Amino acid sequence: MTARLLVLGGILVAAIAPFLASDQYILHVLIMWGIYGILTLGLNVINGFAGQLSLGQGAFYGIGAYGAAVLTVTAGWSFWLAAPAATALAALVGMLVALPVLRVRGIYLGMATFGFAEIVHVVLRSWESVTRGVLGIAGILPPIALGIDFGRQDRFYYLVLAALLLSVLLSHRIHQSSVGHALLAIRDDELAAGLLGIHTTAHKVAAFGVAAGLAGLAGGLFAHYLTYISPENFTSVESILIVTMLIVGGRGSTLGAVVGAGLLVALPEMLRVVNVYRLLIYGLLLMGAAVFWPDGLVGSLGRGRRRARPSAAPLPGPAEIDPGTPLLRVEDLRVRFGGLVALDDVSFAVARGEVYGIIGPNGAGKTTLFNAITGVAPVARGRLRLADQDLAGLAPYRRARAGIARTFQNIRAFAGMRAWETVEVGFHARLRRGPLAHLCETPAARLEAGAVRSQADALLRFVGLENVGEQLARNLPYGHQRRLEIARALATGPRLLLLDEPAAGMNESECEELIALIRRIRDQGVTILLVEHHMQVVMAVCDRILVLNFGRPIAEGPPAAVRDDPAVNAAYLGTEVRDAVAGAPGRA
Image (cartoon, rainbow, N blue to C red; front, side, top):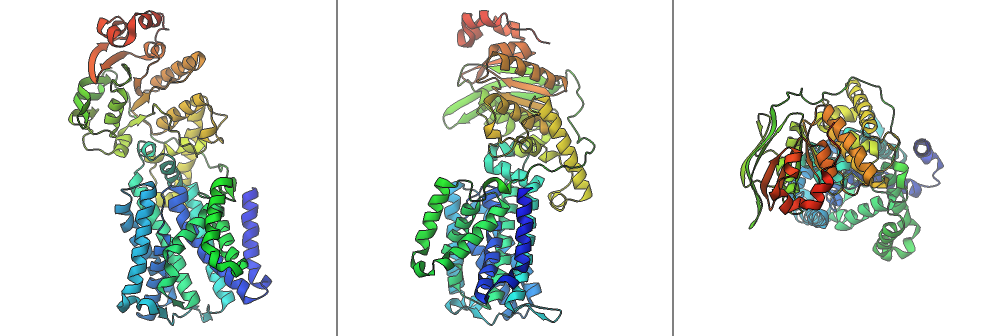
């Protein structure tokens, strides 16, 4: 409510700003605030939401400005056609650039986009037949509509304000929608997001397109406001400035992007006497933000609480169980990493509704087996089949959509998302309405969102986390994070659930609760593949167990038979562990 009142108050003040401004210079600063606010909102989509380091926003700003200027001055288009066309051009270039540069991550992605910004600046200076080189383009006419000349500063201000508010609305809708949840999941853990059925590359390319499109819109407004542009308006310094605005205001926050832009537009005007030290001041601001305000000045104000939505019918769940029919078949599987053979000659079948255990000493290849099944590790030889579907060549997100979900040995629970967000993002691949419908909140999309909310709440109750929905995943106790990962995996509607050491780090009472939870999941008709070192858990819940040693199977069968197998005792259990697990609680 506080954030909403601040936004409404800000809109009211912005609407009457021309009447409050004492001179045209203040109005100029406000117009530039609006233009940079649009630029920063765009960068927030790719950097704050999707977590991709882009230092090329200034390049798309220049593409939009020059696109609009060339179309109006050379081709004779009106602003109302040239600005949308320039926006679309920048968005298209952004997506085309994203396809190769997204092959790298982190600082290397930042370097690639920074290099692109330098290339654009060189092209603007050198392509004289189109851009007029260092002379720039003059005579850009201001917008005119219905006889109203927007060349007047106060009128152009309202045009920029309208564009800024639309950009804020777009950013807010992305953040609140299933698309935004998917981007936040990619930001926190791209591998885990892909294994929930999210097409991570498509989402990142789309985010680049939105960021570049908003930069193009800002560029078109800038060109028609000044009526003259040159390559020096779009140097790499602009990209650094926009990144600084976002970090100071607050990455991932729509309000923070606007506040950061306003602060850094106004600050140079207040410090004009030391303009030569502008980059030094920006550097100090970046350092201060990193050390003292890691969440930016706005911080958590940009993250609203969960909104109520209408309830709706449940989303489709797993397929009907056919007991005894193999759901997963692994045949002659080999996985190697260079000269190291991690798995060799591994074959087994898991029946529908079964809890199948995988045990063995550290380094036996258990997690590698999970990675091969989910498509993370390359398979050198063998076949993997889920029911009648061959998994060969399927990307991890397609395997997740086919009905395979997993948890991880080391918790990957989307630390920066709330518990309810973490679970809701698990439903992403099951949504029937497209991203555009959810962004626009069509009636059908609202009903579907209601179904997601209802089932997410039910899953939190199912795993015993009904009272922690508003807490960030990283703030939850260790055992709660384990259960949150299981709830997120169940949200995908899996036919096969892979649990990788879910009891790791748990005490005795937590293990008892985990045993009960695994049994409840099995009773819901979900087939479970369990990797676990805690033998009391394994013996209590597993129907059959496969033992791996040095990447090869050495035993398979019911728990009692595996427990008493001499080869298993020699390689893994030992007589003390065998005697201890002999008294493990029986299967329910």
